[in-house]
Length: 143
Image (cartoon, rainbow, N blue to C red; front, side):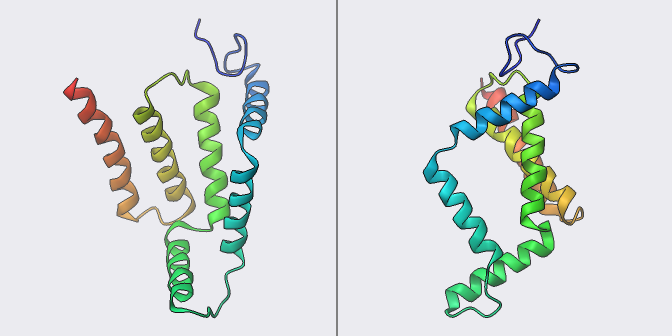
């Protein structure tokens, strides 16, 4: 029987919501105060962007975020989709793989969240998914 993360021997199904709650609590506990504050500041900065910025750098940032918002949709919703997909990954998957595989899987889920939240016809998102998968294929073939 596989060992499921964050439980003694729980498996998907009857105990999956318990496993999910435990995972969320564990993730919250791992987050440091510094990263939490930085995340809140970044989110606040994104949501409170002035319509007219003072410097050219500010205007460039506002313009970039507006452009990305049109392509990928609202950031908060995309973040919620992405984090939900990652919870599923960690909740139902024996995540003992190497760091590059874990990162590739997380980035693929991030790109899927962007597709679900924004423009599904934006080819770069699909190319990025293929690129992350190809990095793993290349490494596996070199072994």
